[in-house]
Image 1: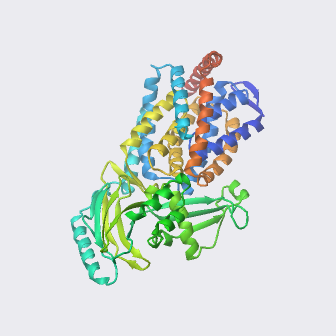
Image 2 (image 1 turned 60 degrees about the horizontal axis):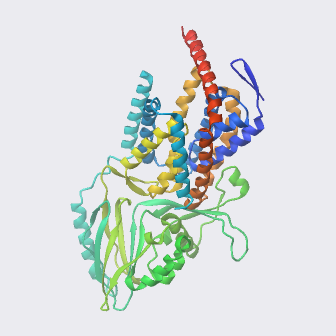
Amino acid sequence: MIVEFWGQEFKVNIVLGCLGGFLIAVASSMFGFGGGPFMVPLMTVGLGLPMYVVVGSSLLAIFFNTLMGTMRHYQFGNFDMLFFLIMFPAAILAGFIAPQIAKRVSPIVVKRVAVAGLLILAASLLGLF
Amino acid sequence: MRRTWFSLVVALAATVFMLYQNGAFAQKPTDTKAKDEVNKAKVEEAKPVEAPSITLEIDKTTLNNGGTINVKGVAPAGKPVYLEVWAEQKVRASRFDADVDKDTGKRPYILYMTDEMPAYYKIFLPKDKKEAFEQNKKEGRKWSVSKALKETGADVAYSVPAKIKIDRYQATFIRSVIGSRGDLLQSMDEKENRRRSMQLIKARFRSIDKVLAPDVEVNSDGTYKATIKIREGLAPGKYYIVAVADKGVKSQPVSFENNISFPVMYLSNAGTSLNILGPFFLVLAIATFGVLMGAGGGFIINPLLVTIYPLPHTIVAGTVMPTVLFSQGSGIYNYSKIKFINWKLGCTIGAAMLLGGFIGPKLTEMITLDQYKFVFGWILIILAALMYWQTTPGYIEKNKKEQAILKEFQKRAKEAAAKKGN
């Protein structure tokens, strides 16, 4: 498939994109996270698109997944309204706080901390300690 | 900026409204005095009725988010006394049966589901059954409710969950792919319903400590007493206690009330009450960090929530997901304003993801919490590897160039949008 973006044309292996997107969507809606961190590498490395094409379009693709996942979870009765109302304002508030902090910390340090944190969390989930 | 503040106000207003609708504010500690009297009357009334059986008395009829209740009474001498305690509040429980059937050698693939599981259920055993209890406890996660009940003799007391309505669905691979629960099968007979309800008890309460406890002190003259501990974070509302000595030898049910007050609230779908400030600040902290590291907070919030709080993973997955919907929506809106979205690419991959999102939630209810944690552990390791890769020098170098181009494009796009506006 040919993708046009601001006058530039990119050739995209859409089969790989759809297959990868499908698998990411299954996992993300099954476990309840957004698929962004997996989707962006898929589109940059897997499909060979530059970052400026990916940022917006990957968000759009994920939005479809989140929307459908939300509807299905609701349909299966896996949605707790009160719990949602606790978390939703916190998530919105975080969206305002984060950019204030972002100016003061290096993204690389944040990512290194994240790596350590994720590994600890993973080890505890896998029952290693 | 004005628009964001406006939308925040709208969101907060809607939140308050929905809270109100949800009856959360109505959940204030009720005036318990009148109820106490009713309860007392009930206990006294119950006594003379049962000639051959058991009496049961409790020392208080209200609790405030858990506490202890002293129970005493008289049973026929020489009989073990079991106390069956359950909450009136009901929750959902489900179990996917994919274990090989011993008789046919096939996997049944049947989903058992009920909406009538008591939010709290426990049988208190006589103290002399402690050994049998410990023996079953040693089996760890593999313990079986029916075996434990049989070996401790508690199956005579097991009656409330046995009568719940359980639906079963025959799942098939094709149906799972299209995201259906499958055909609703015929309802089960009494015996089968009882057996399956025990499996659902385990799926819901998980550990043997939550279902059984050898706490009843029975004396040789038939008097008995027990201290019942109702832990924090359980469902509010009415609880019932019945003392059972033998089949058919039962006391009248005695009830007590568990009250909770703000900021502790009851999540009716999850069947748990918790201090809502905990999840609020947890989500606030993690989501802030999530935005900074460039990944949604869901990766960290979900496993933390299922680890810290006694919440079912289905509820966690199903409730965290919608919270990101709005931030994604506003992100798309902002990008589309500066024409930074390729609709053809986004919608094509989006169609594939739509399909995936249709199937995923179905799979959530087919796995157990342990499987959920296990797979999530591996997903986090992959994510950690991706994050690490993004901190390697080669990536940073490349990323710098990309970011520069990205900024340049955004600048141009904004200018173009501004020109159009004029």
